[in-house]
Image (cartoon, rainbow, N blue to C red; front, side, top):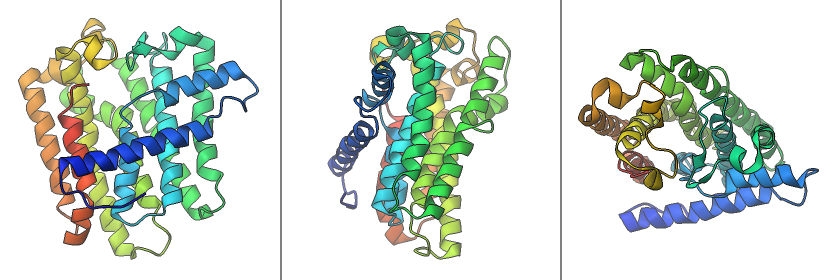
Length: 313
């Protein structure tokens, strides 16, 4: 894929469209419907992963990796794996024992279409498949494969996404302050976004970056990730309170109906919108730490941050 410098909104859109087609092709290649022992399970997996979505996480993998001249094959594996884990998490989050939602991306959720048991197994299999994708290409150095697996496992596990979901379930109907709510969402939402960025950096071939340059890059991406991860959830809360289900592609107003704490309920709508803009400023400021040549190549990261905050669904 070309690694062009962004110079306009149309240039970014061309960059993103190319990679959106790329992630679709990768998912289709790694989830062949004919190869599974259970065609019904394969269909549920494909339904959950391949049919729609903003693809923010794979775009972040490529945006971070390309900024530092990462290996293309490694980035492809990382981008596909992180999207499969994201898809698995949505399938499980929608189950009746979790958020009990019936609509995702404007379509019936996996358990509504295929049944609860099939949806549960599809989520399990998508998570397992993600790690197969990371370790199935012998052209990717084993040290890179191991680092990618470690980053993704940590983000998905008890200290990241799963732990955040547990905190979310425990908090239903209880009062949370802004600090506790932020910590929950840094785990539930932010951990996988941060992993996407650090996985992009991990795709840089060993020895390509000096140790100090690699450390500075990881710190910069960490600051950027902390800001956009929280901003993503703040905007989700704003949209949940202000948009309809047709616009969102999922059930609107569920947080309020379930008496969940949100940034809107704690801060108010205007203050939550202001917080999202402040976090966008922090993300863009983090990118300013890059050397000028790298900063030019970080424009996809800047534009992704803007689009995370200024979105309608």
